[in-house]
Amino acid sequence: MIFDTINNLSKYKSIPNLDLIVDFIKDKNLLDLSESEIEIKGRNLFVKALRYFPKLAEERNFETHKIYTDVQIIVKGVEKIQITNKENLKEEIEDKKDREDFQLFTASGDISEIIAKESNFVVFFPGEPHKPSCVYQKLDKPIMKLIFKTTP
Image (cartoon, rainbow, N blue to C red; front, top):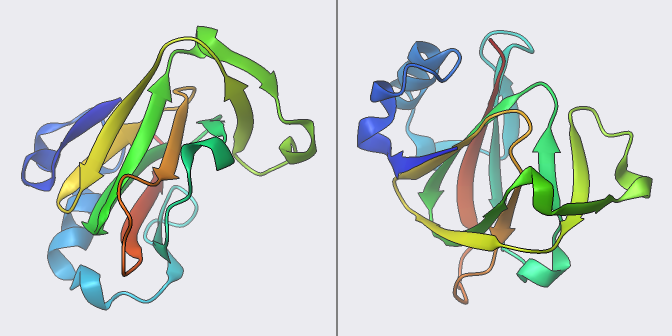
């Protein structure tokens, strides 16, 4: 996992397709992106532009990814993201099991929180448990977030 400001993104060479992600961010007015999924390098790199109101942490589940690395960039707003170790994951949520690239879990034990705000980014590599999109504070407007999905 990586948590930093967008100004430092290009320093993290371990992120797959980093140059293409940085170019996309430089070339676009991020606030003007409509909610969509944009392929950059086919299914090896695409971005989901999302606008949403976060939910209470109790209403969300932890997720892990099998294939993709998530590069989550907060464009507008602020949210809480919970993280934990794999050892703290409890049962898998059975009815969500067949999703394309991720599994949902409950967790107990040590859970930490990240407060991600405008110009922050968080990277989750495959297998790293995280619970994004949690309420940090009441918002009048939805969060805008980009989630780059990338593979080596």
